[in-house]
Image (cartoon, rainbow, N blue to C red; front, side, top):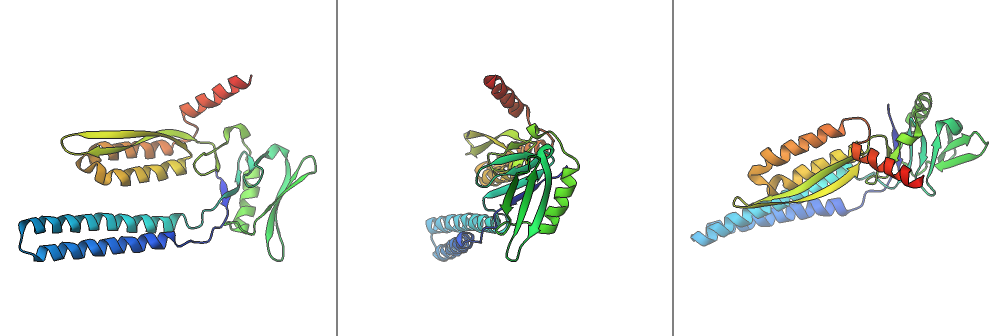
Length: 256
């Protein structure tokens, strides 16, 4: 049904560029050392050259990939500020507040000379104001979504805050990922239990596939890839997972 998550617009730091530069440095050193060892007519030096070349290639490309991923996907993501969804308006910055549409009289974007604000007027005539000056959001899109989502309100109880990104979601999932190390004669796996919204779950699944690509080697297409596809498919299913619903139910029983 749609949701607008608004976070602070964080300026790009130098860490991704440093990681990319380190990747090219490691790649260059590995390739240079490999060709230097290859020039020496000795069996052991040839083995060492191949090893250095392979290590430089793998770790160099890994650093470059990680730096570019950080640069592309995470450069504008700061702290969560607020979220607009069919359940209401979730204020996340400062003192968190959940404002259901049933208690909101109006919500509008007001422009100033140097900044703009989201002004929410409640039924008891109190107002809640959020400064949009440092937020990464298009003002016109926010106006359209405020009007659209207010017209299709849903139960606010469905919306829970994702522990990974800090934004509310009506489809939290629990999932299991693992690091699978296969050494041809033996293997081991370390499992991790996670919980997150569909977007965070897909991001963790992508990271899971990437990390295990070398660790699982020949087992990756038969063990890791099918599990990753299953996790991706689960993230597309609407609604909280059974484990999350059980946790909510147990919490409600404890309160009573």
